[in-house]
Image 1 (cartoon, rainbow, N blue to C red):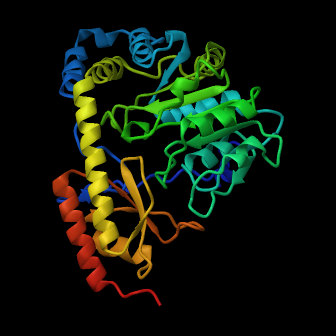
Image 2 (image 1 turned 60 degrees about the vertical axis):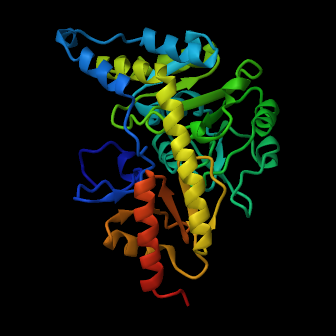
Length: 362
């Protein structure tokens, strides 16, 4: 602990991202990055925006980007809030919506681990709600909670499980708590789930969070956005403008707009990921894995005869990275991002070799 730190810094437990090594011939399937590059139109827009106008500040309201998002989702621009990746969006949400006189935030016990990081950072008590035995959210745990919550947050599809709730389940949760924010983090929704954006007209308390990092292949650009009632968006803007009025640079705004407008490329690459996910699920199942039903760009799989850390290590020796979470209930699962067909062929070959060489669990 440094004597220069503020009082709360020593008690933080920072988020740990997936390993990001820079090694030759590495097959990186541990961070849920899209195997297909960004839209060529997005890349060209970024190149075109790299000109003398960069001497000026970007549009702090991201007017054109917010209008593009609103038009695509059938909402108004004042219902859109943009930021530097969905993680920044979530940070503002935790700070602006969940700090309520020490009341706890309801969230699944197995989900995106950054939620707990933000709970510690913003001093929001976390009430972890266990998933059921099938690693699915039980709706009644949220419609009839055991505590008086400050709000609710869950990823849909959930991470790292890939399982998703339907709109009727989300509607029931929002209806049960009309005075509380219900945040639906839809980082992976474009790979097969239904978006809760459809519910915004019915429920003023729903907040939907999207990112361009996954389905739009723009993880390196850092663009995320929230969609909610104008009342909620106004609160998020107050937080943003008390922290950083210019979260999105001119290049990011230009690239994001072009990517969102390239519907054909988006639909084609999403479908390619979905097709390969279903194929990989079948191949892993044939190899003896238990694979959860996924609507994300990854699968969550365990093998009854082998320990997940041993398989992960064996794959890494072959230059294949997958993600393992050493936490209760999921310690024997591997999260495997979906690659291209050629990458998945290499992955399956590496898994076959690992199954032949790794000792079976006792």
